[in-house]
Length: 284
Image (cartoon, rainbow, N blue to C red):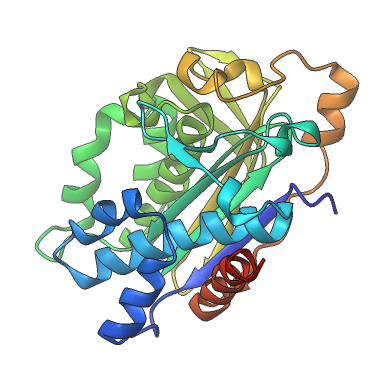
């Protein structure tokens, strides 16, 4: 498998770091990232934010073999992370990745040519709301066809699962193009056959340049992956890519293979990858 195609996930439910362990892991990241982690009061939120960045740095270091001092990860104005290109652009002109975290999992997906978007959802709702009360907060985000499928799915659990399937796909799409939730989710309508052969219509027009995968990640969590054409990116995100024009043959070679399986990593493995790479830098 091409090394630019990666799918990693971390289950953080049993990771209970000491203060020293958390501080050490944080110290492996560049200083300018620290406030985005320590601003959270809730420890669960801090853990997700930290592991999200550990995944980004460990993936770039391990999969691409870039020296630590050359890894520069920034965000667009809309908030999508990107690797500021250097030598990596020679082999992977559009290397891009996306991260997501919800509930017990934090994950990352990367692609060398296609845009990639990733989203995780946990089948949970606020304790004081019923399923119907919860989903009705988001009515405006769905087309009439999608909403009909959600509310007629069956039991409350089935309704919630159907809701999260559509939601997960919509988020993966807008994250892939680099737009974030500012994009009108109601304009993105998904169709499927028993949640396979998933395709999207944008403003009522099918876009065949996208592929989507939806699967169970574990313990009541769904994960979706979206892959699309570089020209679909927002203008700010296009500036981070080096090859917007792609031949159809080259694009199909990147778009059509089956989705890569998620590899489960531990926080300790991520810490080790980054620590060992930094140590080699200091030893040289």
